[in-house]
Image (cartoon, rainbow, N blue to C red; front, side):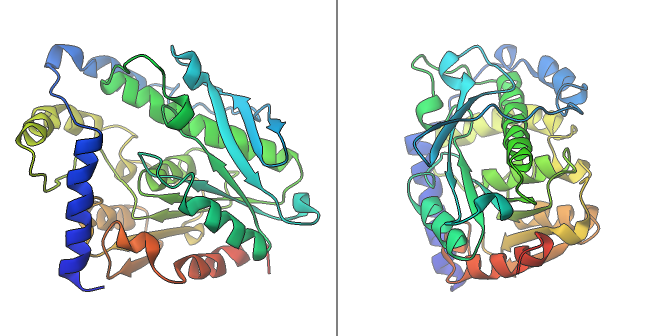
Length: 312
């Protein structure tokens, strides 16, 4: 895709994103930054133990389980998802967990299509509704601050690990993570905390809190600028993938970068590639949005995943 078109698509999506979910200025007294840093630097952010999820199915595909990290919002304490099984003997086939971006636009649109394609290739696929997304969003206004964001990130990783444990206990031979955008960030964090993950694909991933995005809305620019000190402080913790270390081999990590990406900047991804000892990286001539619709990209990803999951 030509660079101007790719960047225009990203630029337009970026402006729309801040219309749908406007960023509001919050005074420093409400950041709860010190509490967030204490939590992120403590042992509870990435606990060593992870119990398997207690899965209950509603029909063949839809499932739910109690979150392993409870929040103050009851709606957010039940995890919802879908399991797309292979037609026969699904427990003998590997599983790929698909991790959506934020907001979760893909859960009801493109991810089910990808999951069915993976089924035809002989892989199970699982989808998760992330904390505070879709039906997990509380009815009351959600308090947004550094501490709540840190807790939500820890909850995300804990739920991915819990589902991984259940799938392995069911007999599935291996579990991979395939994350898109924000989901790529979560895949990276999970790969830094759980050796049971066979491999991880980070597609145009977020890498850290701090970012530079071309936003036309003046109030949004002012709010982002005001939050910059908090973001820089949180980027000194394990939340920043560049400062984290994977616990799976680098040969089992794939980074997919959009050369013209206006959401997930190239420089942090390149820094991550260097810090993680140069795992395989695909640099696509696309932006953030267009990279996720490259023809046969999922076919290439499947061919990369298959030998690492022990599948033909």
